[in-house]
Structure formats: C-alpha cells, structure tokens
Image (cartoon, rainbow, N blue to C red; front, side, top):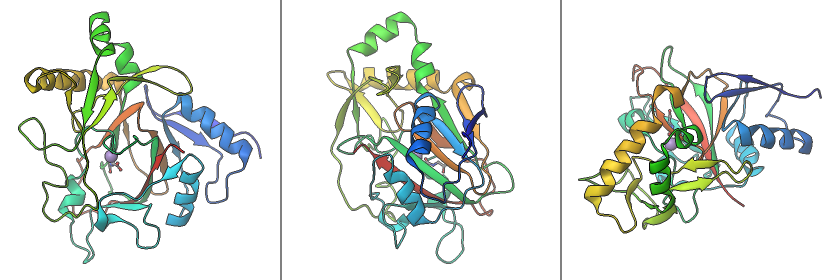
Length: 280
Ligand code: OGA
Ligand code: MN
C-alpha cells in the first residue's frame, strides 16, 4: 500500500487522512502511521468508511480499551462498548435528549477513574445542512495564555465531576429519563497536562465537567473556568467539522474540547456510532 496522506481541513484542527481503508484490519505499519499523525493532529478524519459496531470497537481497541458507557439506553445491543449518538428514538420520532445532548463544550468523562485517551465517531446519517461538531485546540489555547495565567494554572488541580447548579448544568442525572449504571465521585486532574508523545502542554479545564479547583472557593473558581472556556473557544482555536456519511473522526480527549454545534433541523436524522477509548 502507498503511504496515506494528510490534508488539512481547518486552520487550527481537523486533518484528513487520505488512503486508509478502516473496514479491513489495520496493519502495524498503518497503525504506526495513524499514531504518528494523531500525535500532531488530534482531530483526524477518515472519509468514506463503512464500519459496523464490531469493526469500530476493533479499530478502537488498537488504541486502548473501548469502555462501556454509563448511559445505558444508548448502548449498541450487540457491542455495548459502542454507543449510538442519535436524534431518533425507537419509534422513529425525535429523541430530544439526543438532540440537545453534548452541545456544551466538554471533554468526555474526565470523572471516570482514568480519563479517556480518545473517542471515535462514525457518521451513518447526517442532516442535509449543519449539525456539525466543533473542536477546540487546547494546546494552542494554552500557548496563547499570558505568562501570569500560565503561572497560576501551573499550581492548580481541576475538580471534575457531574455537577448540578448553581455553577453548572445538569447532564444525564438532570434528565429523569436517562439511566446510568454507575455513580461518579469527583476526580482531581492537573489543570495543565502534557501530551504523552509531543510533550506539549494542554489546558485541561472544561466548562461542563470541571466545577472547581482544589483549595479554591467556588466563587473564585467558576469565573476562572468561564474565562478559560471563553479564551479556548475563540474562533482561532476552533474547527467546525461538517459531517458526511461515512466520516470516521477520532479526537484526542486531552488535547481538544468538543461540542455538538446543535444548529440543525431536529426532524432531520443524525445518527452516529461512537466508542470512547481508555489507555491500556
Ligand atoms: C460525543 C459528542 C457531539 C456531537 O460524541 O462525545 O460530544 O456532535 N458528540 O454529536
Ligand atoms: Mn462528547
């Protein structure tokens, strides 16, 4: 096989990997190529793919452990480590939880025992317009902070959990319809982490799941979290991914934040498969 190629999609993030067929088991050479590309390009897109849940989980397994998500009702029946991201319910009607889910800036599940490494979405049906996913480059966002803020963050530990007002929105638990199969406790994570391959510093604070800093009052912490979120989500750090059917997109759960743009017509179907992968 000839070497795959990289093609930039956005000014900051978003890189297409051209010339890889993920429906076949990926050989070691190609896996090495993907790993090297992903270390530098934390939102990597493979177009025109066609994977079922088993293949998606198998691809995820090459990078770590795909884990069963706590949200019970969206698991794939045959492959529970794969979930549906869908706005269509079992009767074919609009699933409003699916529509509004994940439209605030976040990283996935930083409150699990260990934070996930990456996640993969594979588009099966997409709206005729909009309905994209936005990604923020948390490496570039960190680099652009001033020295005083960098010094302040160096000593800070973020507290990550599922939280419910007054400082945050309720997610999942706030929706009585949603069944979770586990309870979460607060997890402490450094506010700045380093990329395991490149060593680049990354701002690891997000406005959905980070609800405080160790040793800091909420009244002081929340404005800081908001300020950091506003800084990180400036246009210059954000890539808007326009989905095509067949896109398989993997993102680094540390180096980026993301959100559903939430800007499409809900009556149009938007259906994807997802797996979240944890370090081995
Ligand atoms: C996710 C997520 C956003 C979207 O899959 O973790 O946040 O656009 N998705 O569906
Ligand atoms: Mn998410």
